[in-house]
Amino acid sequence: MPRPGFILGLLAAAALTSCGTVHFPTVDDQEASFAEYRKDRLRGEPIERYILRRTIPLLPSSGTSEMLDTIQKDGSGHWDPVSGSALATAISSDGYYLTADHVVGRFPPYHAMSGEDGIVISAGRTVRRFPSLDLAIIKFEGLRGPHFEIAEEAPAKGDILFSGGPAGIVVNDRGPRRFFAAGPATRSRPFGSRGLSGWKTSIEIPNRPGSSGGPALNRDGQLCGIIVAGRYGRFAKRERPVTYATVLDMKTINAIVAEDRSKETTRSES
Image 1 (cartoon, one colour):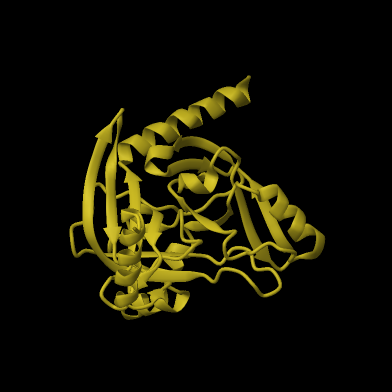
Image 2: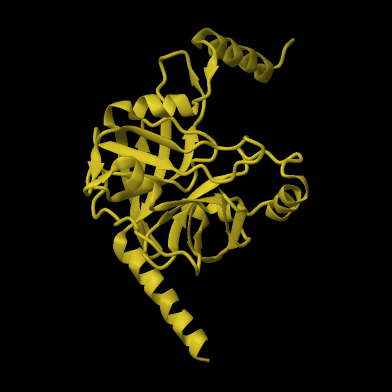
């Protein structure tokens, strides 16, 4: 007689099959979600420029040394630039960024960019990790530029949020394309424990590998969350794509950054 677990497995497989084929969001899906907002401006800047000036591409810490060896040896090897990329979101003008904790892990973060002089790679450091929230604050000493302000309130259901990021490393014409996407917030949940507070938001934005660490912005150009996860596949057209974003409140971020700046000053004076 078949085991109950085996029967349940068959029923689940049949249910998935009846829903249709799995669709994995692409850059084209993201572009389609963003199309009607492309001419919008955030704080006086074209929305694409506004996002690109405040986000940077990262290499994930896991396996970074092997990736770098492969890139430097022959420019391609077995490294996949699409899966080997992530983003970081600027929260200060002096090199502090928020990203997803699963991107950083226990190793130093690396900023990587393809340019006219080849691939430029800079090592940063991790300021503070929040594994339970899948968030991390990181610092790159040599990076300066504009940053996002953190929103004081969570987005309401139906608020349109924007996301996007630069291309990062492109090897032998392969690699992640820059992307922009938009969609409504469907739910925001506040959290607060162990001295940390903020909110988690679900957004109807097509999410792809490589989007982790990128921003979710409101119409005022304020940071409402950092992309930490997504539902990559959807069945037929009955299930909408979902991206999950988390952010700490502004007071918490400012306190951590101020404490780290103070430590940096002490280290430089000693």
